[in-house]
Amino acid sequence: MAFSHGGTWPVIPTVVLLIGGLLAAVPAASGGHVDAGDMLMMDRFRQWQATHNRSYLSAEERLQRFEVYRSNVEYIDAANRRGDLTYELGENQFADLTGEEFVARYASSHDAGGHTDSVITTAAEADGLWSSGGGDDSLEAPLPPSVDWRAKGAVTPVKNQGSQCFSCWAFSAVAMMESLHFIKTGTLVPLSEQQLVDCDKYDGGCNRGYYHRAFQWIMENGGLTTAALYPYKAVRGVCFRAKPVVTITGHAAVPKNELALQSAVARQPFGVAIEVPTSMQFYKSGVFSAPCGIKMSHAVVTVGYGTDASSGLKYWLVKNSWGQTWGEAGYIRMRRDVGGSGLCGIALDTAYPTM
Image (cartoon, rainbow, N blue to C red; front, side, top):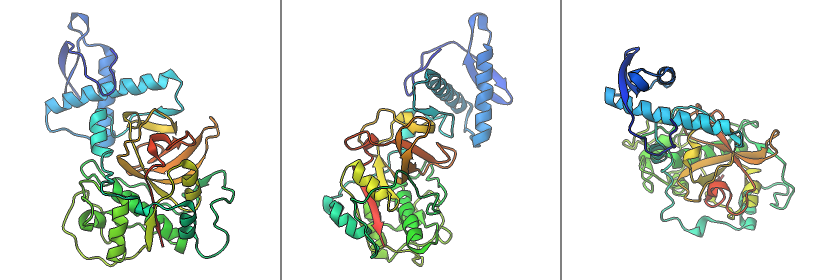
């Protein structure tokens, strides 16, 4: 029986089984017998639980999550069988969440409330801020066909914000600073998201925030400390003083179009805000090109761009904060040059720090 992703499930007869110590309700076939496919699905669910170290507080919750898992797996398999996608879906740590739950927990922490256009620069002003004092940094200079700041050693490993702390804004701001510090000094230092979560008075800690306000606090604080000195805990705690290690001199944005963003990313990793459709929940690989709006609710970092060799599609290389078991080891390639504000509004609300 097919299920719609994020939808409601029909009421169907079930039988209760005890399989490997897991109480499970599975659909009853005609005559009250359990279909072999249901047994295989239950085994697949148990393997998924073991892989992702997932446990539940009650038998009822396990049954509920099994049904969500079944619906998601059927959605994933059906989408991949279609053969007309430019990307592939796959099971990951989010397979027991409905689409609505996933968006609420992992893609609702970017909050641009109170932001004004005062930080948005013209192309010429941005050129001045990017300039390091030598050579021609003109935005009109020919751009390289592809950029990957990971290959230059400028990007720290993908981190995980967790499901209970709406802190993507902090991870995006920190990732930009880490990369720019490497570009300026040649040293890659993991910095502290937790310091922002605990101490940034302009943002909500685990209750949403905005990378431009984070940069403002960092400037007033005299910098940000390291992740080693102030490790991430995924809850807002008491702020404690920690010696700043990396500081910034300012922050800005670029004009709201993909060409300006491409010019920017050629110089340093850039913060962007995107809408997260439920189809992104199970992204595994390829160039993501699903329909998407511009209700930007999640902050990420664009660390490069290029063209996919197999499909010829242009893409943005985006670093996420959902851990390394999602997507391409924590990254997503999003289709580039789609016109207007870009896929999922990727060019509408940008940010970068200066040093």
